[in-house]
Image 1 (cartoon, helix red, strand yellow):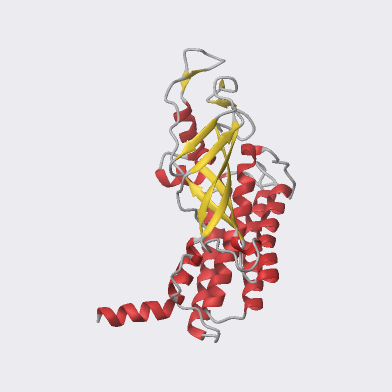
Image 2 (cartoon, rainbow, N blue to C red):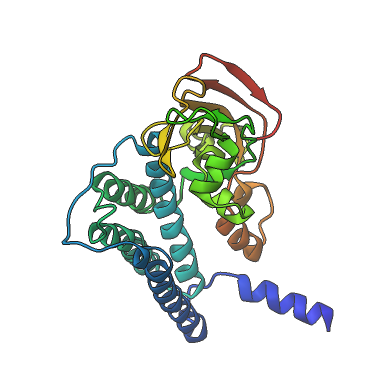
Amino acid sequence: MFFCAKGFSQKWLEQTDTLVAQRLNLGIGGISGLYTGFAVGLYTSWYAQYPTSHFHFFNDWDEWRNMDKYGHLQGSYAHTHLVFTGARWAGMSRKSALVAGVASSLVFQNTIEILDGFSEKWGFSVPDAIANFTGVGLFACQEWLWKEQRIKLKFAPSSVSHSSKGIPSLTDPTVLLSPQDRTEQLFGNRLAEKWLKDYNRHTYWVSFQIKPWLGAGNNWPDWLCLGIGVGAGNLYGGFSNRWTTDQQVFDASHSLPRYSRFFIGPDIDLQNIGNKRPWMKTLFSVSQIFRIPLPCIEWNTRGEWVFHILR
C-alpha cells in the first residue's frame, strides 16, 4: 500500500499536457476561496479598524527604505509563478497558464492598493502598483521570450536581534523604550508576525542563471547561479527612527541610523540540479520562490564588509 500511495502521489504531482478537469476545478476553487478569504480577512482584521475616506493617493516612496517595494516586486513575481505552475499542472497550455498567472497576481496584489486607497490612514500607492506590475512583467516576459525563468526573484527571511537597551523619551527622559519593544509595537510579538512584518528580517534576492549566457557547449553547471540581494537594518519607523508613543517622543536617528545592505553570493537552482523526475521538477519549481541559505558577502551603507557563512 505504501508503494501504491507513493506512486500515486508522484504521478499526481507530474505536469500534463492534457487538461484534467479535476485538477482544474481544484485550482479554480482553491484560488477563488483563497482570494475571498484573503480579501474578507484583510478587510475585517486590518482596514475595518481604521476610518475610511474617498479614494485618494499616498506617496510612500522611501518608506521602510523601500523594502516594502521589493516585497511587492517579489510577491507579485512569486504569485504569477505559482499560479502558472499550478495551471500547467492542471494541463493548461503555456499561453493560457501565463494569462491565468498574470491576471490572478494583478488582482490579488492590487486589491491591497485599492483598499489602501479608501483608507484614511493610507492611500493608493503608485510605487507599490508599479512594483506589482514589474514583478508580473518580469515573469511574463521571460516566459514569452525563453519559456523558462533565467532571472528569478527569491525571498530569504532571517533572524535579527534587536537591542533591549532603553532609549530615553525626549518628552520625559525617565521613560525608556527599547528597540525590541518598539518592534513589538510595530510588528507584533508573535514569531509569525515578526517574520512577516519586520523588514529588518527580510532579504530579497535576484538569482541569475549563468549557463544560458555563456553560449553553446559551455561546461558551467546548470544549477549554479549568481545571487544578488538587498536588505535593510535599524528600521523602527516607516520614514524615520523618530516616533511618538503614548504622548512620548523617541528619537533613535543618531544612535541607531537606518542603513541599506547589499549581498552577493552563489545560488542554487533546484530544478536543474540533475534530478529529472517530472514530479520532483514540479515540486522544486514551487520551492524556487525561496532562497536556500548559502555563503555570501555583504556590503552596507555603514561602510562595512561582512562575510556570512549562511544567509
